Length: 373
Image 1 (cartoon, rainbow, N blue to C red):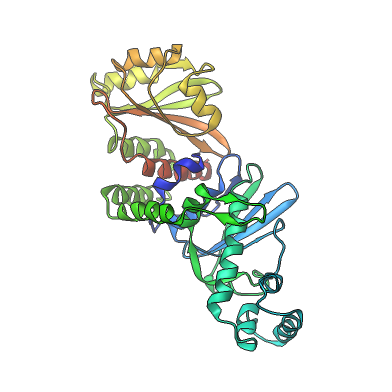
Image 2: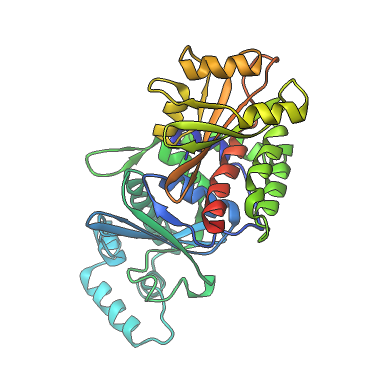
């Protein structure tokens, strides 16, 4: 729902206790950065499978950390990578592979080469880490295709079946670090990743400093409520309740093609019952060029000032005034925008704060609504 540029602020979160069963869909609707974030937030273990045209790939996770990646775009085996780096010879690779085939249970090729060739494990780990980063960063460029996440026991992540090329890390990579770094990476002629490490560490540290904030506690509680198997039609009410913690007023619109129909609100100045009735009678077109059309077309969150389109003028009249900044977010379910959430802080001025966590919640709410339907 949100692009890579808005992912970073959300990656300071660490949430347990909500389900991501059935996490699958189209990369057009949910990008790799957002998928990584959801898996990281939930601290889940399993395998993410990706496909774009003729290319396919996987990312394996243990407790939300990336421990393995494979791609048809980068088919090099660990032996080939180590040989290219000048660490081992072809004969040493063949000897290790022969020994590996006779061992039961399976042992990673890196561990065998480390023992037989006296290679420091850290050297192999660094080479594998660079390859995993290269593969994951390439996934960031996949704008179309399919994805699915399958939960799995961490104990099976080291098997030959799941890990045929042994590109496996003993210590996983932080998913949110990969996303932040992916925002800044540039691929050179040799496919190497160039990034300002000082700026990267500073940015990640800022996110980690937010871990103890109230927004994390709020998100954790709301996600726990969303995971209630009996939530059903209460998802819209839960969205409004969460929005009420962040904004002075909000409206949820049902999306029917280009028509927006009010279904719920909080914070409007008239009495609650009268405001509810007004909102339920509200209908207008998201005409081209409006902020509403932009949010629906891009399936992305919009932070902006209301413009002069007919629909926006209608909303300003209903609300009794315009805010300096408004929040518009699509609720995407099964690849389709089913609702649009509007919020602002009128009559206060200034930007809307702490809404990035709300974006995370809306992503999961869309999946939950898909399951309920």
